[in-house]
Length: 180
Image (cartoon, rainbow, N blue to C red; front, side, top):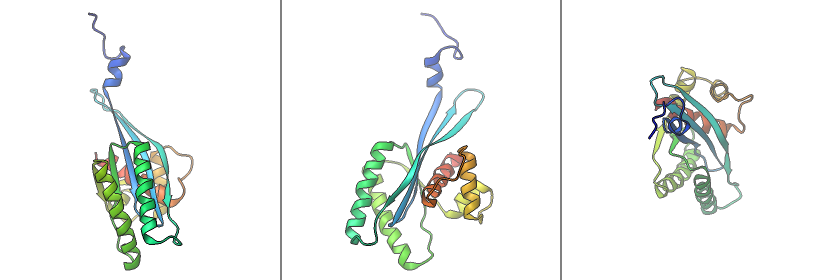
């Protein structure tokens, strides 16, 4: 049986590449942002890695809907999203307490999110807003615009992803990649 050098045999080349799909989530009841990146790294002597954006967007619920229906929409849409995107890891922004009424609504949405992740047996990591800002800009009190610019730069995008919730979710996913 012939022996092929790693550099010339395509099958062996693909075996040496590690790929991970990281889904970033920015929890919210009205708008839940998501962003999926793929990270590739080589196990060779020369460590190479790359990151690419695969998808981003939001799951929205209307304030006109009753609370139970809004949570059901999040539940159903998250199941569908995870089934389609097939992440290896999920990164979530931790709750930020700014207004008690908003925090309670986000906490309810977050509970649904955590249930869906448990049902899919997906591992997750959590980051505070300050950790995300620090990872992307080097400064834990960076402005939102600085974080958005860093997201576009790291993912080689021509423009900042919109809406902001989707850009925030990509920032969370990138933070998980940086921490790996």
